[in-house]
Length: 512
Ligand SMILES: *[C@@H]1O[C@H](CO)[C@@H](O)[C@H](O)[C@H]1NC(C)=O
Ligand SMILES: *[C@@H]1O[C@H](CO)[C@@H](O)[C@H](O)[C@H]1NC(C)=O
Ligand SMILES: *[C@@H]1O[C@H](CO)[C@@H](O)[C@H](O)[C@H]1NC(C)=O
Ligand SMILES: *[C@@H]1O[C@H](CO)[C@@H](O)[C@H](O)[C@H]1NC(C)=O
Image (tube, rainbow, N blue to C red; front, side, top):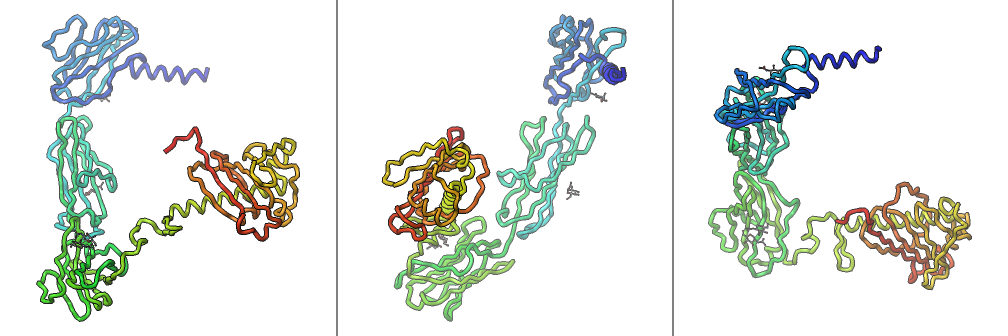
C-alpha cells in the first residue's frame, strides 16, 4: 500500500497541473516575425465539443466548419471528434507576443482545462555597438578588450566574432542577456586577446544575427599593432653564391611596424638607406615592404672584390619601438644543400638519399621492434615458456626451400605455436650457438604499417626479456636467416644475419 501511494500521488499531481495527462500542445515555443504565420496544435485523447484558443488579449472559439479566409485565426486540426483543437494563425501581430492558450472541455466534470505555448514575435534589435580601448595603436603583447552590445531585440540577438574573415572562438566571454524574457532583451559579450604582430591591420568584427533581420548587422574596428624590428633567422646570416667581379645583393628579410630605418656598417664605411650614397661601389636600398610588416632590406655591392667577401657587414634596423642588429657574411660558395631543407630537425644523407627525422625515427623503431621480437623468440625457445611450453606435440616445422641447414619455425603470437622438439632450456652462449644454424620465421603482432624494413643486424640473437602484452592487431613477419657460423660471438662479415619485417594490411581497417 505504501508503495502505491507515491505513484497515485504523482498521478494526482499530474492531473491537477495539466488537467488531463493526454493534453498536449505543440510547439511549446515559436519565434515568428510580424506578418508571419504559425500552426498550433492542441490534443486530448477524447472527443471534445468546443475549442477555444486565446491569442494576445482575445479568446477565439474555433470550429472546423468555419474556415473564413478573412479571419487571422482559424481552426486547424483533424476534427473535434478526434480531440484536436488547433489554430492556423496568420498575419501575426506584434501584440500577440506572449502566451497562446488552448482551453478545452474536461474528460469528466465541468472544469475547463488549458495549456499554453509561448509565441515570441521577433523584433529587430537596435543599433549594434562595439566598444573597445580607445587607443590608436597597440604594442605586441598588449591585452585588447572589446565589448559588443546589441540592444533591445526580441528574442536576444546572437553575437559572433571575426578577425577579418576568420571566426574567433578564443577569448570570447559568456554573453550577458538583460531584460524581460517576454520583452525586449539586450545582449552584450566581451572579447579579450593578447595582440600579436599578425593581428596588425586586421579588422575585428562583431556580428549580430537575429530572426527579425534579413541581413546580419556588424560593428567593426581595425586593430593596429606595432612592434620593434624582429629577426626571422637566428644568428649570423650568410649570403651564398656571390661571384667576384659581379654584382651582389645582400638581402635580409625582417619584420617591423612601423617601417624601419636601416644602417649598414662594414670596413670603415657606414651607409644609411634612402640616402643617395656617395660611394659608387655600394648602395643601400630603402626597406621594401612585402606586406604584413615584412621588409626586405638590401645592400647592393656593384662589383664584389676579394676583401668584400672577407669582411662582416653589420646591419642595424631601427624603428620607434626598438632596434635589431644583424651580422651578414657573404660567400662565393653555393648554399649547402642541408640549409635549404629547414623543415626537418635532423637530416642524414644515406648514399645520396636524404633521410629526415621522421624517416630516421621510423627506422629506429622498426629495428627496435625487430630486436624485441627476436629476443622474445630466443628467450621463449631457450626457457621453453609460453607457446613453446604446451605445444610440443603439434610440431609442424616447415622447410624454407632455401639452403639453410635447419628448417623454419613458424610461430603465431597469441596462438598455440608449434615449436621444435629439441628446444632446450639453457640460456647463454651454448644456447646461442644452437641457434646459429637456425632460420626462423616469426609472426608477431604489431600495429599496422606499410613499410617494409630490412635491417642487417648482427646482435639480433641477444636475449632480453620483454613481455608481449598487447593484443596483436597486425602481423610482423620477421625472417632471421643466420649464417652457418659455429659461434655467435663473432658474426662472419659476408653472411650476416638478416631480418625482414613485413607489416601486412588489415582487412578491417580503412586504408589512408
Ligand atoms: C505563459 O505560460 C507560462 C507557462 O507555459 C506561464 O508560466 C506564464 O506565466 C504565462 N505567461 C502569461 C503572461 O500568462
Ligand atoms: C565586459 O567589459 C566591460 C567593459 O570593458 C566590463 O564592464 C564588464 O564587466 C565585462 N563583462 C564581462 C562579463 O567580462
Ligand atoms: C634580393 O632582393 C632583391 C629586391 O630587393 C631581389 O630583386 C633579389 O632577387 C633578391 N636576391 C636574393 C638572392 O634573394
Ligand atoms: C626578399 O629577400 C629574400 C631573401 O631574404 C628573397 O628570397 C626574396 O626574393 C626577396 N623578395 C623581394 C620581393 O625582393
